Structures are given as structure tokens and as C-alpha cells.
Figure (cartoon, rainbow, N blue to C red):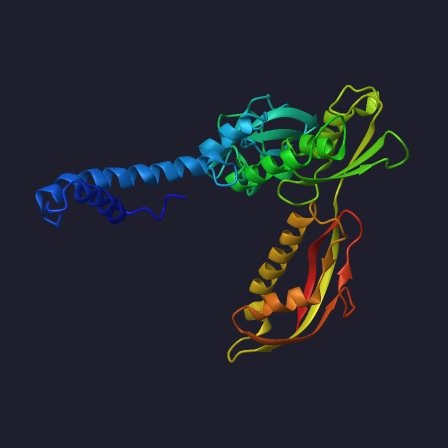
Length: 359
């Protein structure tokens, strides 16, 4: 609003007021009057700049993060905090009881045992919050000696860790909260409450799923992969514990019977006929082809929640992305799961790369 106001404009206005009082006074640059007014003009320009920042911070669509948080707090909203990844670890011998709270190191990260699953299997929580805890697996090294322990390995991600909600995602959630009133078990209410749970990256709500009072929630992990059975069970218990269906002991209203299920993978096999630049071959481009397809599929998984239609793996998207890669100058004969047509995914299914054959 005030970005057009410069020091020069302020000086011109002040000098004009001086000459209104005394037209004969010297107001040229370097004069006593000019030197007297110029510092004030600079300070006033700074004030206008600050006023512009204050004005922007007043409105949620332009506010910087600290002031957006203050604005959202008026509606009881705050950014989602970073959460910790939960892994399954397997230990041998399986007869050995690993003490709860035992710490293990994995590269630069540390994990702590929180729960025994079964003989030789335990839940471990990454001590570092955020998605960085999702990216590691392999051999664990005990922080302290455990007598009789032979091997310790992370074998599966149970609940993905999430980074602190970024500013633009929080801004969108704020406006969604205003535009879609969450109340009393409506779709917006289920969506808002599911997204607030650790490990949930997206949800679709199916009301009146099997008649009045039944609700189905389909969820995807915060790493945009199918959720583990543990995460599904966690969300199920949070909304409507299985042993007390419909009794209102969870987040769901009394009388709502909620069924929570996870999205599932569909394997996508791709075949392409490529024309290579001089000195290139399939062996040289294959890793980058795999990365490009994985990125495309990950983008589709991220859009699953907001897409009201079934996801479609498109030949045009695959070809355009491969043509952007070094070493590939043309592409023909693309097929998806053996057919030269786009592949329509089933309901609540996301694509995962299968075989990719290039000639």
C-alpha cells in the first residue's frame, strides 16, 4: 500500500510546504533547509515501509509466519508440530528380552525402544522429530551393552515422522477452516481431526458408507505411501475403538460407526522405446528414468486426497518427463501394464513402480 512512497516524494512534499510559507527561501539540494529535512524524510520513508509490513501482517493471506500463527490462534488453530517416526525392530535371539527405553544408534540418529510387539520384535521411536527419521533402516548399534544380544535391525516403518507444518500449508488449513465449517461429525470435522493425527498425510471421508451412521475413512501415510497396519489401528482407535463401535468413546460422535482403511499400492509396469543421444544407452539412462517415474508417482500420491476422481497414470506425463532427461531425444511405443492407454487406478489406490523396460 505504501511501497510507492519514496524519500524523494517525501522531500518534495516537505519542501513544497516550506516554499508555501516563504517562496524566496533556498530549498536546493545542499541548502540548510534541505539538510534539515532530509534525515526526517529518510526516517519517514522507513516508517512507511514498516507500516506496509504491519498492514501485510494484519491479513492472513499475506502475514508472515509469526503473525499468521497469532491470527489462526483466534480460531483455535496452531501449526502441527514435528512428530517422531516409529519403527519396528527385530532382535536376535528372539528369546532375549530387550529392556524398554533401551537406546540404539543408527548412523547419526538414535532410537529408543517403547513397546514389545512379540518375541524378538519391538517398536522403536526415533529421538529426532521430523521426516528425517523415515529415511533410515539397517543395523542398529546399542548405546549401552546388552548382554546376549546378537543382532538388531530396523525392519519396517510403522508411523512416519512428520516435519513441522510449513507456513503455506498452515495458511491453506486456516482458510479451509474458515470456508469449510467443521462441526459435529461432518466431512470437514472428520478431515480436520484425521489430519491432526501423527503419521496421517491425507484422508478421504466416505459418509453413509453402509447406511446411516456409518463412516469410512481412507488414509495415506505422511510419507505418501500406504499406511502400516499399526497406523491404521491407531487412527481407528482414535476415532472409534473397534470394541466400542458407535459409543462415542473416540473422536467420532455417538452413533457413528467408523471404519478406517489405508490406501493400497497398484504396481505399474512400463515399457518404452527410446531414441538415445550419441554415446547414451538404456543402462546409462535407467537410473534417471526410475527416479523420474518415482517422482511422478509420488506427486500423484500427494494429490490423492484433493483429487475427487480416480488417479490416472498418463502416458503423456511419463513421456514428457522422460524427454526432459539427459541422453533421451525421443520416445515412442509407451505402454502401461501392457496397454498403450492411460491407466485408471482403482478407488483409494496409488501407483508404485514395477518393472520398467526400455529399448
